[in-house]
Every structure is written in structure tokens, then in C-alpha cells.
Image (cartoon, rainbow, N blue to C red):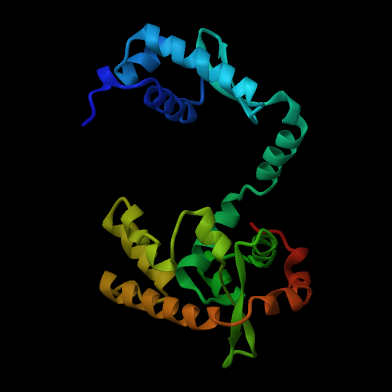
Length: 241
């Protein structure tokens, strides 16, 4: 490991930037010095230099000394655009009902609207339509033996949003269960099997469903947009309980 006492100025600045990026509040120079393993005076000088460098380069962010510490801020010149962008995150936050529905689709895909309803116990048509508008779910095919009912699955945006490379990285839901009773409930509700099914059987069911999704995923995603209005009206007026 590198000796922090001999860290050059450039490396110290880089480390301070990294520390500031993960800090949500202003951080005193003494705290940064302790984290960096450097002298407070060296850290104070490096922070002042960084602040001047950002200002001279007219960067999109600034380093300011406020409330007894240092903190990174967005440039005031871009306040309106940044405010609108952050506000857009709020409008896309998921309700509890949306999270539940998304979890059912993610772990049980490809699944029909009726399948989601059966698992959640309430009508979820409006929630599915909302998730579709947010780009988190899409139609991945039709179920041949049930009147061509739409089959729903997650999208690439879903993977990006949750930091997954593929569906195979979805953690087993049973990992989150606090006790055996909860694990049995999860197996019953999400695997679609009887409550006596084993974790291995439930896992095989999910693997089979994900393989099916991979097959459906080869289809052109553009088809989803083409018929997008056909299915959303039915559930828009119904509220999720």
C-alpha cells in the first residue's frame, strides 16, 4: 500500500475529490486530513487549490468552504436545468404498489396481467401501465393458450436502474426473508407452486421463466411501442389498493 505521508499533491487532490464526492454534508478539513492520512495544513492548501482550479476552468461544479467545512456544489449558472432534472427524478419514484408489481414481474417473467393480479391479490393494470411509461417493463410476447394475453417482462432500463448486468444477477428473494415462514410464503406466491415446494424447485421455475424471457427478448423492441396504446386504457381508470 502506498505511504500516504509521501503522497504527492496531485494524488492528494484526487483522494480529496473522491472523499468529497461521497460526502452529502460539508466536511471539515481536519476530518478530510484524517481520512487521507495527511497533514491538515496540506489538505487545506490542496482544497483551496482545487477550488481555484474549478473556478478558473469554469467547471459545472464548485468547491466551497461552508459551515465550517468543504463541499462540492453545482455551478449556480446551471441552477434551473439542474432543478428541473432533479425534479424529474421525483416524478419517477416508485410507489409501494409499483415496487411490488415490478418485483412480481421481475421474478416471475414473462407474466400476464392476470398473473400479476393473482400474486398481488389486487388489480395491477394501472400500475403496469405506469411502469411501462417509465420504461421499466414491456410486452415480451403473447400467451398462446390464454387468448393471446400479453406477457410482461422487464427492460434494459430496469437492469441499468438496479445495477444488474442480466436477470441472472437478481438476488434470490428468499435471501431477504427473516424466517422460514416468510421463505415459504415467497415460494408459494412468487414461484406459483404449492407451499410445499422446495427452494430448489422454486429456483428451477424461475430459471425456466428467465430462459423464456431471453427467447422473447430477441424480438424487436419496437413492436412494443407500435401497439402501446391498445392495452393501457383498460386499467387506467382502476386504482390499485
